[in-house]
Every structure is written in C-alpha cells, then in structure tokens.
Length: 344
Image (cartoon, rainbow, N blue to C red; front, side, top):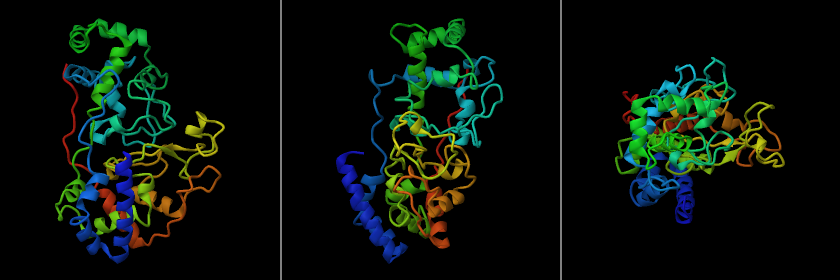
C-alpha cells in the first residue's frame, strides 16, 4: 500500500470506529455516502497487475503455465499436478488440514491458497520464497511432494511435441529450460485473482449487496476487533508475518530463517481473507476447524509467549459481535468463474 493509501486507511479506520459506536445503520449511511471514496481507496481493487522482473508476461507464457499447472506429468508417478494441491474448485487450496504429497504422506503445513499471489510476495508460510518463480521446483523436486528431478522433468517435456511447440511460442530461445518452466508457471499463477464478492458490490455503491449484520461486522473489523491491523487492503492481508499465538513448539515459522529474532519466532504469513469462509480449516497448520473458531481464538488472544505479536490480545467480543464479524467475512466470497484443467 502506498504512503497516501496508508494515510487514507488510518483515516478510514478512525471513521469506522466512530461509526461503530453509533450503530450499524449510521455506519452504512456514512460509508456509502460522504466517505465512499475513502472506503474505495482503502479496500478497492488495484487497477493493474504487478509486472515481474523481465517485463510483462505474454499470452503464450500464461497458456504454457496453465498447461503445466494442470499436468500430472510434472510428478514422477504422473499422478499429481500443481492443481492437485491448488484446486480451483477449492478456492486454489485443497480443503485439507495438511497437504498430501505423492507417496500419500501428510505434510506439516496446510496448503495456502494461490488467490492474489501476484501481489503477496514473499511467499510461503515462512516467506522463504522471494517471488513466484522461486517456488516452482520446491514442490516438483520435493521427495514428499511431486518427487521429480529437474533433469528428468526437462527430459520428459522435451520428448513431448506439444510442449516443444508451446515453449517455442513462449520464449525467444525456444528451449525447454528450468527458467522457462519457472516463468511460465509463475505467469499463469499471476492470473489467479479473486472474483467480485458482495463486499465489492457494496463498496461500489450497491447498498443492498450486504446486510446490516455484515455492515456492523465491517465496523468491528476496522474498529474494536482490530482485524485490519494485519488484514488490511483489498486482499485483506498486510503480506507480513506475525505470531498470533497458535502452533506447535517444534514449528517456529519465520523464526527458522531468522533464529536470533524473538519477534519472528512462531511467526507465519498473514493469509488473504478473500473467499475465507470457503477455505477451512484454518491457520498454517490447519488446527482450527471453522471460521467461528478462528474468531474465538482471536477473542481469547491466543497462546501467551514472548514472541506473540503485541497486536494480539483479548478482544472481549459479545456473541452478537462475533456473529456480525462472521457475517462480514462471509461477504468476501466471490462467485466468479473457476479455471478448469487445460486440454492437451
């Protein structure tokens, strides 16, 4: 978020807090009239896609990346594709508590959604990937994931005339290379953007798009519940890392990369809240089953420990406030078209 947008957001958060104190109906009137431009500045969608290093993705690169993404030939056994864990029908996650690799082994972490990843670098629950291109071969070569070496994968693709033609269309050197695979997969994933949700229609002036309870929940989201301290902006994430007081003692998150940092111990990336009501279970380890249980966790304040973020503390929400907050989160689910598997 730019400095100007950040300043606007602070102003908006203050306005929401005032509105929450005088009731949801007044809040709705203010937010859809005099303050409409400020709301759209704080939560409106970006007008442009981020441009990766090397220039904009081409249509041929996106098409190739889509073909690769849905192709189980990228795994040794030819049974697992990228889309097996990042399923468009599951809002680009897998709906499981933990990811499952090629040998059927349960992984340590929940599969994160790919919604809006073009804007959310660095990537990974611990942020170990600086960009999308750097992600691709970790699951491909992972012994518990797709279990396929770079050399074997490139040989397999070079033996396929369809891929030989597709790479020739996508890249100036016409070659099938690791860098080309990485760029193509990243190019496709940059097109995975959450669709319009009821909240967006309300933000743009449709007063009937969300109900009074959800509007009151939005006031809480910005005010008493302090959700926007980490879940701000159009994608509802700050893209940063926080210990929110959940997790196992043996998984220190970003603290593994910064072992001398007390604040990053048990810190995991703030996920987007787009489509969140449909993407359970929750947290990096899938340890919270329902969205209502997530609200209860934040209301309690999570595990108290030295690394816990100072932003996490008991909220003392009433049952009505919890219901309103849940109603608002449900308005972030889009009914947009889902991408289907590429034909070969």
